[in-house]
Image (cartoon, rainbow over all chains, first blue to last red; front, top):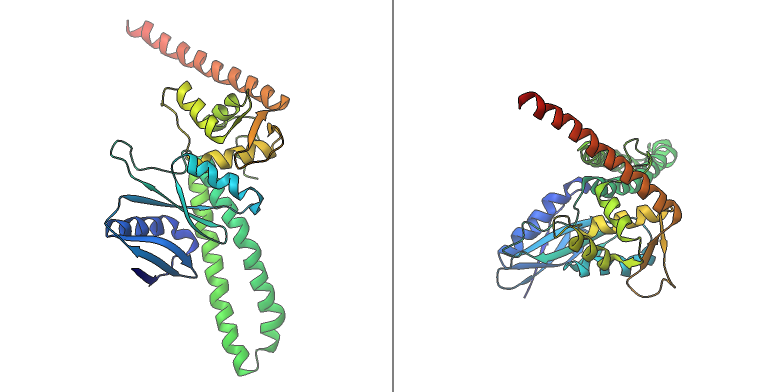
Length: 173
Length: 113
């Protein structure tokens, strides 16, 4: 049995998303697929899975190597969405909460590559806004699009600020 | 690049120290992990995301290189000459830290004892 749930998590909410997926598994809903805010779960017995999200910006050439390193450490690659990768691992009684990052320096790298991905998109949105939308905003439709762009630009800017803050916090630890 | 990037200032984090040390001999990710756990008797373990990220970082800094044909899903790496040099330098840095710590603690012990 499948169950689909729509829920939005923003770029800076990766830990909240991990926790949500882990809680869902505890209730017997095993996450299997993600696409544009739509989460697919499979109904099963409650399971002690821990879900973790990694962000990998680099090229896909080493995708197999990347996944194998996780599999060798006992993690299962569940799904991917653009640069985001979903992994899960069964909690063992002896082990403390399993983690995919074991030091702050490499974990801050995750947020650094995320910021490096967000900045060009942000700049592109601003460029489209200034060169195409603003000069034509006397028409009614374009002025609606204008407000959508204002919203998008604010979200991107906010995301960059929040993700950068996470990165900096890990760097000074 | 961030100022506190340890490789930039020529220092190794504990994670990169142990990975570089393991790559004195050619190894792939899983063997690096096993080697570190054996060496430290389970005291130090590296998560897979940290392993992948650190390997890529050492690779792009030229401290390690791909070993063999690079085929297959497990890539094998080995330390380069500049990797070995940096490892040596970092061992000296860490030794000096221990010397300093012992100096301070011994002085403290003499005063109170």
